[in-house]
Image (tube, rainbow, N blue to C red):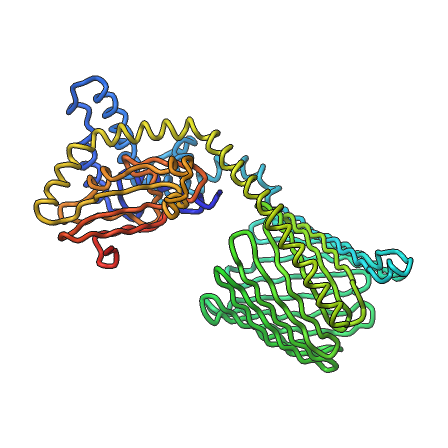
Length: 537
């Protein structure tokens, strides 16, 4: 429900005057005069209308006062209204955006210090290996366990540290290691890392990275083993092949020299990767494909083949909340048949591989896949999915109840603003009708689901939209065109309101032009320019 907040910040005043964030001083003055002529209190006699006009006129004047002042506009663009109300000194001392930013940072330093903890990112994982054959033979079900923990901290603008450790037990054998990494950002295109590890893999090393161009990066490293003194050299080159695809070449020289070539592709609905690796004593190839069925669920298939591996893995996962994900994977290979369950929450992981059989029996392998998968889909259809649908609906109801007063007040304010726009909007509409120009016949703004699925019959969903036909007719210019600017949230436009805070929103418009009917639907922050032939119904 936070998707709707993903747009650019500090744009409300631009929406109020219906201008672009890049608008010139002349465009700001023109927009101000247009709205001021409509909302000036002296034009209205009844007390109620005069009060409505005064309220909206003050909003227009405030927007103009800020956006027409170079210093105030710079502060607003950087920090929003918070910057203007934080006591920031204005005057000849602050003539550039950099100086304004420095001054405001001084005022906010205390708050930034309180947020230091936000730069500390802990992560960890627990791996518990279970074996069904061992359990059926009368031995313990757990055959191994490992734990790892990492802590990353940004200690300054250019420096960061990472400290981690791991412990592992497999049968009667165990061990551990501790690692520390210091990273320094040399410039905007290069960095260097110093690392040290103690335990099973005691070593020290250094690694440097540099952006060779906008689309390629090179990394070089050297590590020395503290156990046998062996030296490992590594080189890696990464190239952005397209907007969604990248390729990597890795070269390692040492006791186990190897060369590897890999690629990754990531799109909105799918991601895939693959690697081919050849070493002095081994070779291998890996590939994986992930398909996202929705914003909360995905399927995965992966495979490994090489001198010591032959494995196929299929499964999927589901997002339980903003921070939690569960995955179930089925694996079959030369090491046996496995089910793997993974729980992810924040930076923490719990991974439970369950060995079902060490023998690659076809009937058993088929049953081990089909039976649990069928149970999973039955549980998902009749228990899990209904539960989460009820929970999601309950959250939406709670949000509606929580914001009901806010929404009602916003609706009343929008209706009042539309009352004062009505005469001018009707005159513009009649003028366009006479010339066969642009006439907005219907415009609705609100919940994206309500606009795309109007036949669902959900009264609460239907109430999360607002009619904005009149304000859009008002915004049609003398040339018979209408433009709503990109990056500006539409709920801030005069006569609009936000009917469903926290939900993704869209704007649906029906209009006539030259006797023909058109329709278009755009997202909250998307540009709208009409008329266009592509909108013809």
